[in-house]
Amino acid sequence: MDIGIDLGTASILVYVKGKGVVLKEPSVVAFDRDTNRIKAIGEEARLMLGRTPGNIVAVRPLRQGVISDYTVTEKMLKYFIQKAVGKQRFRKPLISICVPSGVTEVERKAVEDAAFQAGARDVKIIEEPIAAAIGAGIDIARPCGNMIVDIGGGTSDIAVISLGGTVVSTSIKIAGDDFDDAIVRYMRKRHNLLIGERTAEDIKIRIGSAFPRPEVEEVDVRGRNLVTGLPKTITVTSEETEEALKDTTLQIVEAVHSVLEKTPPELAADIADRGIVLTGGGSLLRGLEDLIAAKTGINTMTAEDPMTAVAIGTGKYVEFLSGTTNES
Image (cartoon, rainbow, N blue to C red; front, side, top):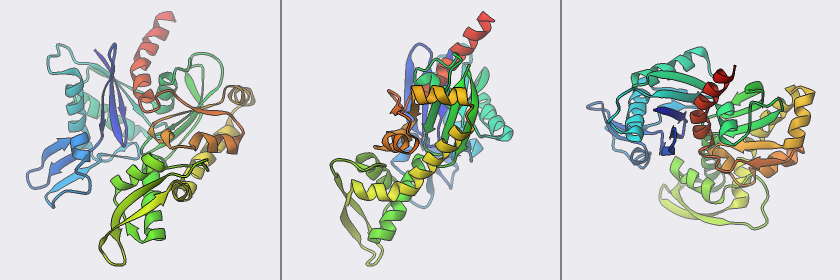
């Protein structure tokens, strides 16, 4: 049984060969500080974020695409693998896991070790942009340039891919989580309202925008008024989210620009022809493709199912490898 895992900062997706993506859960673990026992993993733990009593903490063991708490990550992986595959296994699975393109050897080794500890027979590490490209349905084996912008929860990976490998790439630690943080900061500065991470994410998903939109949308936001210290509700518009997210989205555009500057001319011509493909949960922010297209002058589109592209690509990468080794 071959498994592909998209080990993301915000969520973990598990792809099983022949079945597709069988599991998608937030990468959050809640554990009891007093007994050091895990209380909940995944969606159940996410609901506890910012709502726990003193002895229970809900943590994200991955920060900016990198393992920050090794033991918790290992337990979380074990739990998700068992949940996806079931207990009645005769042989250990071959697991391919994707990592951001800028990780160090030490960070890569930590991911490998965690997967072995969680019960893998063999572990293949794959770089995120390549997985995203395969998952978005791009034939990466051909000698032509494709540009992938994978915006996850903790990192954004931007790469130009040709002949099955990365030609130019960069990984920036600015992504979906930073969109949330920007909204929290904006609400505090502009409205004197303190809101939590989950509320910010909710605003982002419902009315978040990176580019001026034809119609303005509104949403009611509840939080704590910093002046009176009491709960308060205010109405926020999509135009305000655009203002709040401006700096963060522009940093992603600048990173795209810097990769284009380093791209060999033949491949740059291919990209101008074929366009830029966005994947990852962060690419669901409305108006982001319009913003990139406006700033680079290159047609930009979002993959069909941007959330699962990396997981599907990670799973298919193993088949891609075995396909190339058989031919050579």
